[in-house]
Image: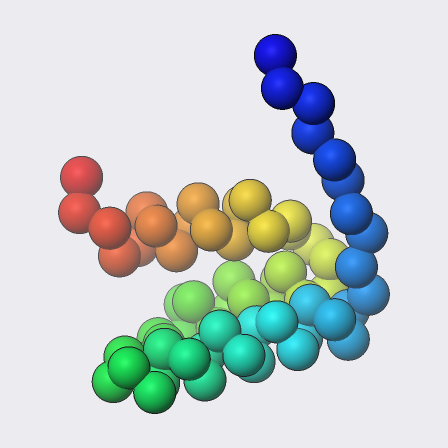
Length: 64
């Protein structure tokens, strides 16, 4: 079993990462919907982790 490293980040760092991800998507012509922004806000304040954020976005956008 692989070891997992947990890296703590500040809300400012998480906000910066989200902002960069949204900007990158917009530069590619994508639109981030309100549900994804709400999930990102939960990530920024620390209510969910990055794994949960990614899982929610994939469930919303990636076809089964």
